[in-house]
Image (tube, rainbow, N blue to C red; front, side, top):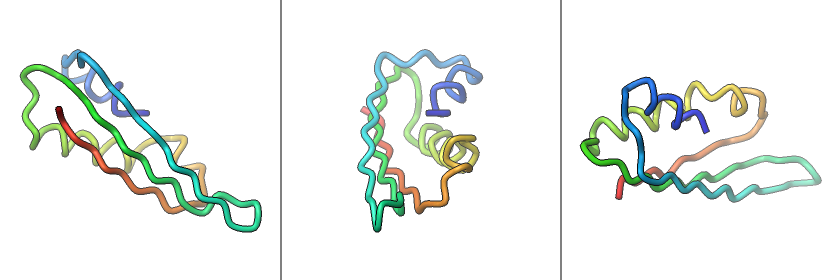
Length: 77
């Protein structure tokens, strides 16, 4: 996920990033991808994290290739 690159650009080294994807198929086509991400990173505020997670979702090159609805539930631990 592009989130790791955005964190790195901000000089933030996360202790842990866990992401799960629930992919929904309809007639053999991916229609929806539901992402759940949990990040542990010392010194990162939830406000900054949510901004970075939103940026990652909106600018991810892989997501832009998909013709699917993509949701993101991002939490800072």
